[in-house]
Length: 604
Ligand code: GTP
View 1 (cartoon, rainbow, N blue to C red):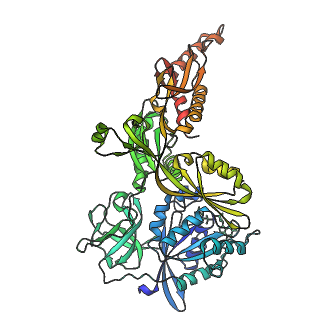
View 2 (cartoon, rainbow, N blue to C red; view 1 turned 60 degrees about the vertical axis):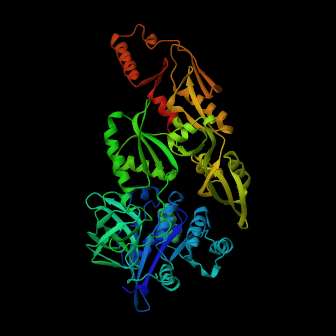
View 3 (cartoon, rainbow, N blue to C red; view 1 turned 90 degrees about the vertical axis):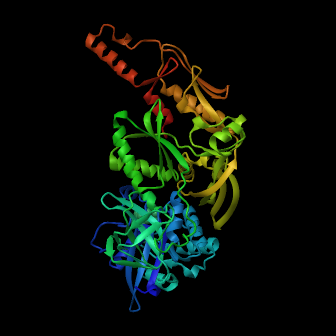
């Protein structure tokens, strides 16, 4: 297929603005799927995606389109639709020459619209603004066009108004893709070079890598190398995605397709990596970085007897998602489990949900934490770690203040877009989360865009929900990595009658210690049943107690209320009590049921 008649493009949008619906229409128009094929939104394959209505894994399709008596090959590269996956978004769009930037005609520009715009803009792509849902009663395309002109500096005449749902003007979208986007400039005579922009694992065929060819051509039987790991493979199968796989003998520069080459794990075909011919090494494409876990959580089977079932489920899921990091972990209270690292909160939620849905596994997930860093001052520790700067994921390994020069915490730059009625409330929520306002602009008569620098730790737990609920659902939020900053963080221990409970140790900001300690003590007070003696529940920093609750001693024993009752009932109660004890853990002489740990540790 001649390169001049190829167009590679992505659709980018804020969640729910209609990306999948438009993709479906484009597939219908070009005959890749028929209208009668009632599989709504073919591009979103995974069950979680369908249920939550979000695109998690990128899916891709090659479309043939007739324009002015010529056939064009339009490669639609679907991108994951959420902030957590922005690195993946940036890799997928780097395989394109242009994007369709979808904006809902009623909601207007939202936080992810802005984030996605900048990804495309920085990659110097042609951006076609598309205003969707013009069929809605309260659609206001004019206002949205003005926003686009103001915020992105794109002339409003360039916007295309469509209804993806009804199909209005969708054909025009394809025409504009052909007209406005440049063809890829890659050369077939160059050595073969391809970008991996997605990869999936298939139980029978191994890794299926989605690739965009930046040069040369690739045939069945070729020996290729992946630049990141330097391993070599033989190509067993390759072809186009329509979106089903269509095997071919060869792929050429400018095309997009899939490659199967005996890779056993998705880690061997990492997103952003470069493939080349073993005989003709090339300079890898720029911008590759391995996915970086920013949110960690412990994961344990509800019942230890489910451990091996859960282990194989976790293994299977990570086969398909190389961005999850897995480390075995064990907790005295919760048993054997894992410490998993995710790109962000949504990523974590999607993973849990898949685990529960696809593998029917019942799990306990602990509250998420972020990776802190410490610049060590202690020569002994520096020697032990072989370096000055260490990353701390587990609070138990938090080095004492006396051994470090400074602690650092991960920061993010957040974008919030909201009607201006909520400015006051939003500012106070942000301040509460230690946010620092960097910027605020009006994007139209009564909507503002605010930029805040936040410690990641402050937004990992329910920030987004909070923002949504206090703005009646109108505020949108997105964030990007903003590096590390010095922070006054400390280690907080929880004590039961003076004995520390290892699994409840946390790292907190000094200003937050008191409220976090108090909350933890209160939760424990509720979760631990009364016993024969009084129990002091304390939060402490070093040797200083900062919060305390008391669990009063038990007055009656379990049998008290059975006096006069029959003996089998007494036996039952005693048996129940004995079973309960098996699941207890002792902290000193205090019995803590497993449930109490679960209640305190799990995410709310
Ligand atoms: P993510 O995959 O989560 O990023 O969402 P999306 O952008 O793919 O949105 P999707 O296509 O799933 O559409 C979201 C909702 O908007 C669905 O309920 C669609 O039916 C609806 N929708 C999409 N396009 C239109 C449209 O043109 N008009 C109307 N009225 N509704 C639309």
